[in-house]
Length: 115
Length: 108
Image (cartoon, rainbow over all chains, first blue to last red; front, side):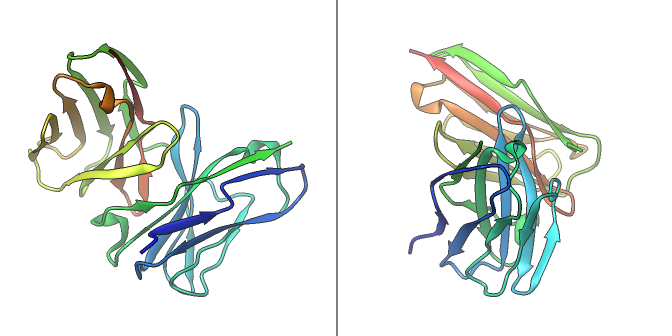
């Protein structure tokens, strides 16, 4: 039981490049979400999904796309990377009922630098 | 914008001193969660409070939920170096929104 797995752990991109941050969970959690963490800003919600085929925007969705084709995977896509997207990205998941009453399980994070 | 305000942003204490972080919302919350993030790590769930006026304890940690369900606090008694990290509150308002966090440093 690996929990929430994020890949890669570190990535450096050039402005304008695209990439996908991977997130997979093996706990059969229906709810999954992406956060970015910046100094002094806490964790800000980017996108979330309440189940396969369903996604919705969080607090800071601009510049990011998501899809949820399976229960296990929730990739985050940066279409055209910008320096403002330099951050630590965390994926989280929880059981049915979502964050309203279920603890979130976080991955180890992806540290992304955009030059 | 941010709907959950957390103070202070930083706190430095001597080992053995107490520590408190506060979480405030302008709206009534259905529940509140607390997480701890060690330096270089990921947030780890600590506890969830649901009832008005609820108080829960985990060893030296005491969590409170206000009577109006608009504020919460985490109090650590006699801090230890293992308490170092950032403590976040999180509230569900249609989405799970985190406070800015309080980073605790403990001097041995």
